[in-house]
Image (tube, rainbow, N blue to C red; front, top):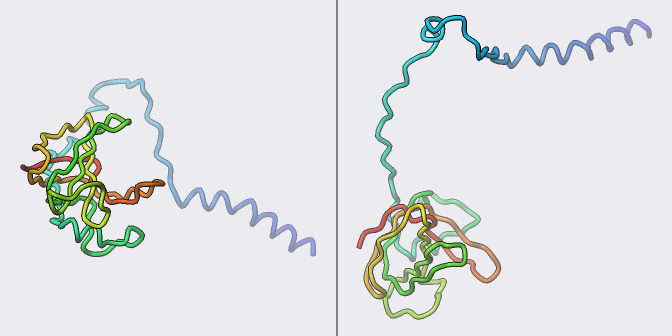
Length: 162
């Protein structure tokens, strides 16, 4: 019995040591360097930043609205380009410019079955056409499920095309 307890206690002490060996920690680098040549020998040159072009999934308002916000389908993309007509432009309480975009320029009010909201933030201002004119917004798709909203958004808008 004592021998089993001794083996068990040794095993319990060895587990943290064995686990620590699984994930080697990087050695801390001293801020004080003895020479600049040693520092330059250890640094590697950074590769040139490749051009990262964002690919936007082209969706109609109907396709975006038809998607279930709780399930991600193959049609969905984090970045989407959606076209429609500007039916309202308003400055939101958070400083964003809220743009209601609908399938038809004659839709009044927020028809959640035929409209989305695009939000232009101050760091990415939008060049917007007048109300009633066509627009394509490109940006990040989100579903706003706050009380009283429940609609699809492009937030933030990264590009606009008139």
